[in-house]
Amino acid sequence: MYVKPYVKRGKSDAIDAEAICEAVTRPTMRLVEIKSEDQQALLSLHRARDFAVRQRTQLVNMLRSLAAEFGIAIARGVARAIDFAKGIIDGKQSGLPELAQDVLRVLSRQLLDLHSRLGWYEITMRIQARLSRQAQLLQTIPGVGPVTASAVAATIRSGRQFRSGREFAAWLGLTPRNHSSGGKERLNASPSTSRFIRALLVWISST
Image (tube, rainbow, N blue to C red):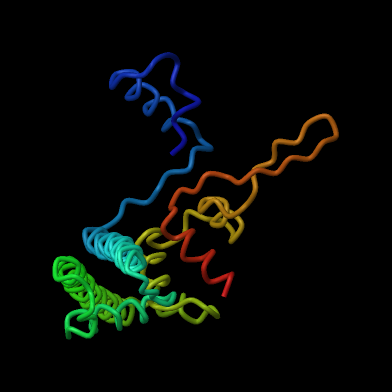
C-alpha cells in the first residue's frame, strides 16, 4: 500500500497511522494479501539461504585474498574455492608459515560447513516446491526452477491482486518509471518491492 502521498507533515507514529487510515479508504488503493504462517515460514527459509550465500561469498573472497598474499591464486568459482579449502584442511599447502596455515584452516572449515548448510537449504526448497501446486505451475515457465518458484509462490500468495503480467513486473520493479517532460523521454529504474525475487528473475533472464 502506497502511504507516503498521504503523509501531511513530518514523521511520527501518529502521523503515519493517520496516513494509513487515509490511504486505505481510497477506492483505487491496492492492498497486499496477508501471508499465511506457512508462507512466512517458507520466506524465512529463502531469507536464511540468501544470507548464507552472501556469507559464503565473503568467505571465498577472504580466502582468495589471503592466499594471494603468499602467491597462491585460487581460480574463480565456488567449486575452485571449495577444492582449495579441502586442500588446506588436508595439509596440501605445507609450505606456508604455520600461523598462516592455521588461519586458512579455520576459514576453510567455516566455508565447508557453510557450503554444506546451503545444500540443506536447497534440498528443503526443492521438497517444498514439490508440495506446492502453485510452485509446480510456475516451474513450467522456461528457466524457472524450484528456488524461484517457491519464492514467488510464498511472496505473492494467490497472485489475484495483479490484473496482468505487467502489473506483476511493475510491482517487482522490472518496468521503467517514466519521468519524461518537455519532449525528452527519461525512463528510470522503478523501485523494487521485492528485491530478492527481482534478483532471481533478472538472473534467469541473463542466463
